[in-house]
Image (tube, rainbow, N blue to C red; front, side):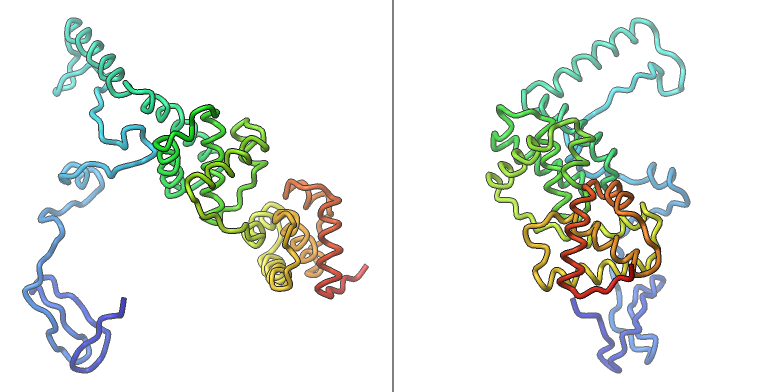
Length: 302
């Protein structure tokens, strides 16, 4: 979208004057628009509590909630509007209301499935430190899988893990199958099999994993400087241009680049230290190290 400019002098130093409902140019003073409509609320709030009390809309729809957040909650305080305890008869009535409310909200098999799956999704996402937008997108993809009947005959936990791995790939978040397998408790092969099935059935486009995404994480855990990170990224960019990462695991290539960058920049770490952080073997790092060193012509002092 093009930036708004003054029709008189061409300046983009425009300012709203809310007291006069005008848009004017600060350079030449021309009034560009007047009698503007304010679409904001007519009330003011000075803190978060005041804002929450005065707003007339509810919370946004959340796919991570089984009912998308659109449900009435009956609290367990057993107190009236004045804060006084309600009578035992009213307490028994509220108990029955809560019980039937809970039963009615998860009446179908799909709702029961979502209740279990979305709580598991939130647990794994929290353990992996995933942001809320990835959780929402993962919950939406899981709902699509349920609606299409792809869950039948599969473990809920394995589908949840596969969905999270898919969204991590799409959003460029460096999380490996090993990490997701460790947190979820599902074997890596099972997650990989489910991931390929979901990708095929739901026509999900997943980009190739870029090893550059792993560099900041590995360097941070090894206590390496920003200069080492930049050098490792340069090495990987050259490797990608030459097609050296094709058919190689991205974590192994990223780990080797970090190891080389550390040696070149005088912040040497052992191959074992790098391997432990990256979750690969020392042999893998040694092989990738030799390939990068030979193909990119990197000279390293003994």
